[in-house]
Length: 96
Image (tube, rainbow, N blue to C red):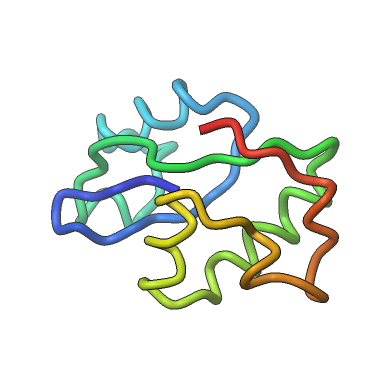
């Protein structure tokens, strides 16, 4: 989850956090359309998973949360509070 200049939160997935943040900040062709117009600032939260399929499932579920719920995840609330029954939260480990 990336904080943008307008205080919005961009959610995406990658296997290289620092490289991806640089792509978003530089507004390169590899950066997301959203961050080109919302100016990415920093990584606020990230979770590791064993494979891309699990990462896609988590990304989808987080994107469907409210802004307030995303802010609470950034502050340290557990995924299971919002995603219990939607994904197996034990398969993800918060790394930021």
